Length: 113
Length: 503
Image (cartoon, rainbow over all chains, first blue to last red):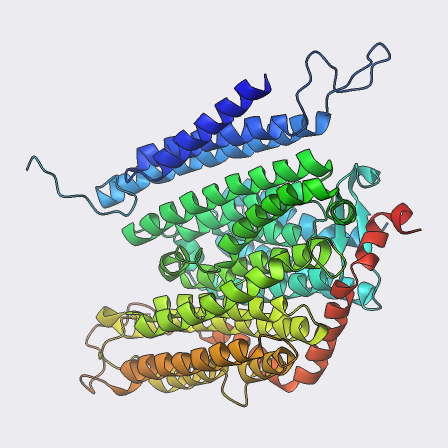
């Protein structure tokens, strides 16, 4: 399970970083989203991976999972969601204002023209 | 437990909520009065807090009465309250300027302004790493909206880049916090400090990696080279009162770096000196790059933004010394540069409007209206920022150079600070003479005055605060020494948050 999870986090991060470095705002936003998925999984794993263990005190349980990372992930998801929503709106506004979806606001020369 | 500690956080939050909910009912002048009153109350609260902690005690507020390290705490020590006072005073003048008409250019300016203060005050007071992240997000979200306030292609473009770079920073912050939690099992700053000092040797490598990630995040906020490239376009595009308030935003990063350094990497810590070396090298590079950038700037507001970069570098060089006098001089310079740069942004707006189509481009153009007053103010601010006697910039730099003599790297610090000061003088002389002396035609600008005469009082207020900083330099440096003393003995902070550990 550890190997699988770390592979997933690694692939998501790599994809996120690659997309972040693209020139168009759409891929940049996708990159940000992938990075935030990666970091959410990472935070979740920082409390160690325990299967079928309750996070709160239960007399029947002999093993617990750490509840704090779950609270952190919840906060991070909410903030990430709000930020993604905001950046999508901002990118749309930039596209309308600048007539270009390049991150630096300048269009690349179109090879077809 | 003193409830005064949480008041500077709640005050702007509640005011912002009232401003949004009452947006339809309250008139514009009522909104302005409410915003200004809230900022006044924040100044009073911060000064009152200072009275309580002046004797060196550290006030700890347990949210929900959960004891740390399980609950979240707010901690008011001298450094935090120093930053609170500076923020509130700066906010007052920025808001006075905004109330002259900028706040009409879009909706909810007043509410966003209060929420920006909410995030700033929270970031200074919090004693928890994850809570610091949350307050960073709050202040950033407000700043994204404030930056594009008023609209226009340039602002939207700068706003998009600013947002994306800061979202990447936030992600890095979460990676760093997650690594630290996974290794150490706590996010409370005081508890982290205790456990880092007792960490097993095999964990130190990963703790160092997480700390370097944190360093990158805070350096991005503080505009430390090579993470400073986002700043000039963002600050130059913002409306004047927003840019003036943003002068404190880089200081949040500076504050966080100083806090982490003093708690985690002080003398006896196994990782001691981890931040010090980085801060010194990168601070000097930032100072030089900022100065060269100011010389190369093509417009006044870009030049001021480069001055922000240079001042960040200088402050962090002072903090990297890790001595009482070094940190005190850094705190003094931080206060000076925040006020001076904010005044400069307010002034630049008036100059740009006065020059009509030449705006703030650094080219020979028409003489702005009110040239005498504007020129005199420009001269005062430029003197102060370049660090020429007798104003506050000179005192701050002098104190830093004196403190640096004790460091083994003193030739580097002295050399870079003096050379960069020379470059800054050249840059400011160039822009001053282009704006006020090298005038194309002596006639007044042909355009009819669209705006009524700008009131320059907020800028004058900030300049006179700078003069007060000069006159009261001895006592303020004394307060800085007291603050530095507290930072260099992190045991007091840790003991206050976790009473059981020290005993």
